[in-house]
Amino acid sequence: MDRDVAAYAPATVSNVACGFDIMGFALDEPGDKVTVRFSRGKDVTIRRISGCTSTLPMNPARNTAGAPVIEMLKHCRVRRGVEIEIRKGLPAGSGIGSSAASAVAAAVACNALLGAGLSKEEILTFALHGEKIASGGVHVDNLSPSLWGGFILVRGYDPLDIVQIPISAPMWCVIVRPHMEIRTKESRKMLPRTVPLSDVVRQTGNAAGLVAGLMSGDFGLISRSLHDVIAEPARRHLIPGFADMKSAALDAGALGCSLSGSGPSVFALAKSKRTARQIGIAMGSILNSVSCPHSVIVSGISSAGARIIS
Amino acid sequence: MDRDVAAYAPATVSNVACGFDIMGFALDEPGDKVTVRFSRGKDVTIRRISGCTSTLPMNPARNTAGAPVIEMLKHCRVRRGVEIEIRKGLPAGSGIGSSAASAVAAAVACNALLGAGLSKEEILTFALHGEKIASGGVHVDNLSPSLWGGFILVRGYDPLDIVQIPISAPMWCVIVRPHMEIRTKESRKMLPRTVPLSDVVRQTGNAAGLVAGLMSGDFGLISRSLHDVIAEPARRHLIPGFADMKSAALDAGALGCSLSGSGPSVFALAKSKRTARQIGIAMGSILNSVSCPHSVIVSGISSAGARIIS
Image (cartoon, chains in turn cyan, purple):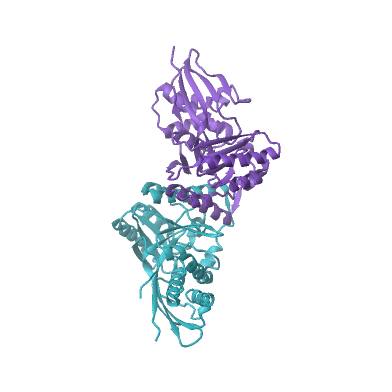
């Protein structure tokens, strides 16, 4: 019997306020686990999806973990069947890179199963086949931090240019996730097609400021840079109590607070785990006051990224 | 007789391709020298403008060096007359921060003359009165590098947030200045009022990438980030032979090449003084081929900024 190969890929926060479509960072947890093994058949099959999942497709061509495996087998000209098991640590449509984590874990696991020896850049292109199914476009701001770990800048898309930004100051992240789903495909339709030049100046200033702040360990600069004038104004109405949650987070000491990806999760950054917990309580109490069921996650920023776990 | 106080403020390259309205750096030279002294009268007067000047206003309220002095005297409640001499090292309307250099030198000199002890942030607000006359708006991407020196990020305008970006890799700058004038006020009218979202993503990626490249000393990343999808496409037609000059610069080893400020000067960055000189020759030969009179400057990036020189 062939061996199982299992990989873990962490949840991620993309956009990070001022970095629409170009920034993202990885959390220590939660994450998705994908196990692959050769099967007796000739096809790729999804044997089981467990964990916090609702209705993910069992058809591998339409599943974010299945598509990367199908493409990698094609690329490597392997004509054997592969069986996939997915353990979802993060729910779909929650805005913390659920589809990206499954796609990355599947691509990393399949690379090891095949002994393909692909580089991270190559693995990313296969994971993209999964992300496309979920988001309807070529977005790597969740995929790349899930794969590399740490804080990632997608400098450019054509050609793809992934830059790992060294973080000089340790930070903690709070995620407050209202128990509702926003599909990335739908959420993208709410974005403006054009942006006033004055807002472009503000967004570029903040994006450049955030990178400078992260690299120099300047918490003040990080905090002043964590503003989004493009996606947040277009999407915040989708999230119950967003304005109050953001105020509560900042009052409790958050460096900044905005939508995680396209929402509904909201993230905040903090200088310490203790402050992060207090921010989580403050944000949660706002959602309690509007009777919105939710979960709170407090996590460090992962420097590890996706990895083989067995 | 009261003493003379003279200050020097260097030329600057603003926008820096991907940093429209938010980035600028200072050159070692050329620069403007402004001398101030108390006079017997009660007014601010401009006694002399020398150097490479054409028709700058002798009315101090309409002169970029005069306005900061008038405002600073008001602010400090000094009811004495001040006489100003301006030695222009850089011509007006050339795109290397001529108005900013005069305004900064005047504000720095006047601060010393009055013994006002103003901070750089405060001096900047007075220099702004001069820059407004020239550009018709509140732009500090030439003023702030001229005042602070080095590479400056204007993270935000409201409130003003000036960030000095430490450069890990030494670089040289080439300026090729066609002998023609483009007024910033006119050049701004050519800018698009809105920018497609896809271009915003490209511009923010490049701006963030440039900061990361400068701070980490990654020449490859600096080079890949030096692209402007907003102002350059709207303004390049104003500059004779721009496309060929840019190609020639890149072929000669430039890390990047774009308009300096709103032009007509074109800047290129290089890893060494030798390469910078070769780039200057290559760019100059393009302007020669279209019979465009021009000057070439090769300079280091100044870390000093404006200073009292006597």
